[in-house]
Length: 410
Image (cartoon, rainbow, N blue to C red; front, side, top):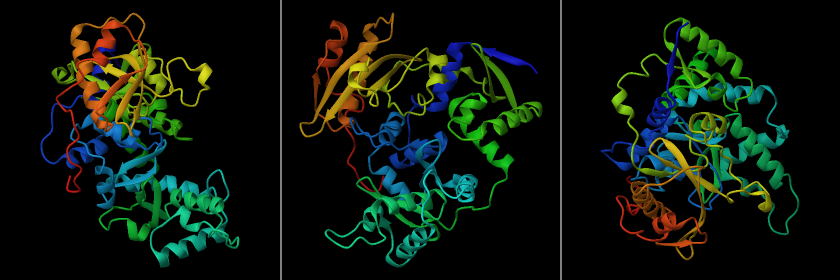
């Protein structure tokens, strides 16, 4: 089979175009742009870390500067997205619900997750939700000073998580960051197709979703953190290539697969001159081996690393300029004082920044500051005179320097 060799610059352009981090502009309602981004990317990873705005908000803001923090709650309430497990806890397009039925069936067949939930407890939790309506895990805690009943918090939480992963209950909203569960038959919209997909259909779905959002990929990347999926993805990639629906491309020393039309219309893939400050859980950078191969960016977050062993900082954010990841920015939003604190800024080795980068960084940092509901910036590091001037001075009005009013109508 013929292999099309593409340059690293072309490969990066394909990946960035697929990820939509530099959208040309959007019309219509902001919430519709948010929904479109979720549908195109296939998932938005949920994360609890709030040093800066949480990852699920940050990823969407990076692609839709009209994004509002209420969008995910609104789309979930409207039944347009749902929470489930992709490679991690995620918001997913409701249209894709049926493609996760095999995962739910697998959890049921293996008798639960890594913990064993008491079947009697699961039944009684379902009965309570059925009669009382949507409930949180804390609703199963013991009353203060009360008798220890079967509604112990830890077993109940484990049972709820198992019921959720088995598809018996769904998360209908979050109160703060507390999950609120309801029965699937009440939470799932009537229009959702629940026909169980065959193995080939689900595999095609995984391949198609990945290639649409990333341009090209290997079997390992497509099956990322999905236990037991890689062999069937590998087999199906060969079949789709033999049938002429996919092609092989060589990127550096890696052989990847892509759609046969992926190299058409090269003008679409010109790199932007804008800067993007990305979340560590952004879909573009979440697979660290891919990013190392494609961008030469050796990246790990260090929030789980002992302080004395950190090289860059607690929660360093990748800085994207044009088609390169050029730096790491460690910052923290001090929300009480509305101050965005820059704790570290580290350029990639050999990187020299022209004035046009510094101008673009100033614009992006101004927008990022306001996205984090801060109105001032404080430097707690000495990143170099030119970067210090960009970070500490000239932070003012930008192209998107404030979040629009947070209205429920999107």
